[in-house]
Length: 357
Image 1 (spheres, rainbow, N blue to C red):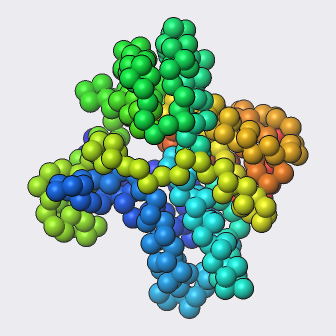
Image 2 (image 1 turned 30 degrees about the horizontal axis):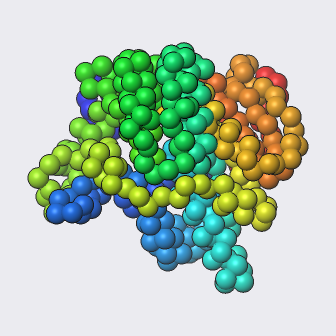
């Protein structure tokens, strides 16, 4: 991406859908907020899921101009990754409650799909530390010290816990790309390990610098004009995730597991998947979280295939399918687009992942 401009990728998942609406809660985008007396960039916030739901029911997706409501009763799916582990199930819950209150199906929600998603604060963090140790990213000493001093059940950690996390993620990690530990890092301005440390304190593109390019792109005046962004002419640059907002953010559920239980009970199709090279929201944390749903296994653990190769492993439960994606990081389609496509096709078809090539 030498021209620092937007371009199409050869493997586009949206080609497989009649309509694919990629919309996140309002502040997880180019947005600003007031923090004290200063404006800050949004990083995460749950409240806009409420606002977006109201907007959704007012029709930008359901009544697209010129379609005469064509999409209104089509099968509807919600998917996302990372913090979508919160707002995708939350939005699905809102839709279910809305349909129930209206006593009819207004939005024909069929299923949700979450990749490398935040699920439960305690289990996610405990699973992350286990991942770091099991992948030889931290020493035995750091692993034991973290487990001794960090409970991961409180909003704030003890000084001993913070010190142990700092040493592990800043000193022992080195310049590793936490989102995909076997991929190169963007060495001039590596932020991955800082994010890993920060997350714990508060609670087939091979280019490692795509986030840096994105910041350059979204700070271009012509791009902001086209997106109707930065209309107030803020005097500083937009960043992907602002530390001040991140550290002050408290509007987040500790666990989404109760919502999963509710959605499973109403028969919603639910798929959760994990790229297995992600150390930020790793597969170990997701598996640990989901294990506390105590679901009955319907199809035992097996390898699934994509283009004659093992694409990952999967297990099907009563009400939920879990899958790993081999060789993928935090954002699965970035490093493994074909395997992501196999995953998406199976999800939309309501079929188990292929057992053979």
